[in-house]
Image 1 (cartoon, rainbow, N blue to C red):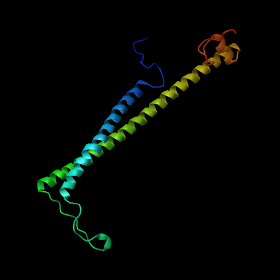
Image 2 (image 1 turned 180 degrees about the vertical axis):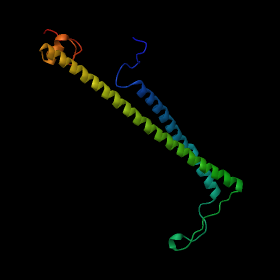
Image 3 (image 1 turned 135 degrees about the vertical axis):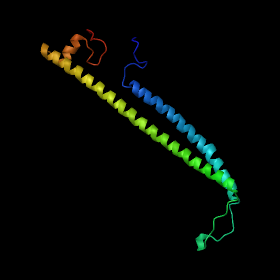
Image 4 (image 1 turned 90 degrees about the horizontal axis):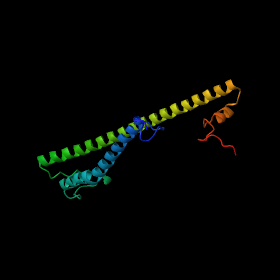
Length: 167
């Protein structure tokens, strides 16, 4: 084994693609963790604070459905509590904006990985066609069809890894 060989062998997945997939996996774990924390802890806590500030949900007023004007209830907050609630709501909005940026970054990395895999696949196809063209050129110089030439030399070009046996 050579010192520079990849642990996965030489395949369609390059080292750049593996690196992109590792970054994508870390981002995906972070996105899932943020979504769970945001949905289970952050949002309910802020909703509880806002509900406590509103007091009882039912209030006296005329329903706007019947042409009257319903006034919004006054919050039972001190200026300091109102400022703290405002900061919590801003923090929640910023939290979800960061979450959306991470999702967009994950999509970008997935697109970059797709491009890398496509490029690697195209290069391997080109190499295969170059080998086939060289084999055809060698066979035509010997006066044989390309398939007979590759079988007689045992290149494995016919899809088998071993040369044909004499059955």
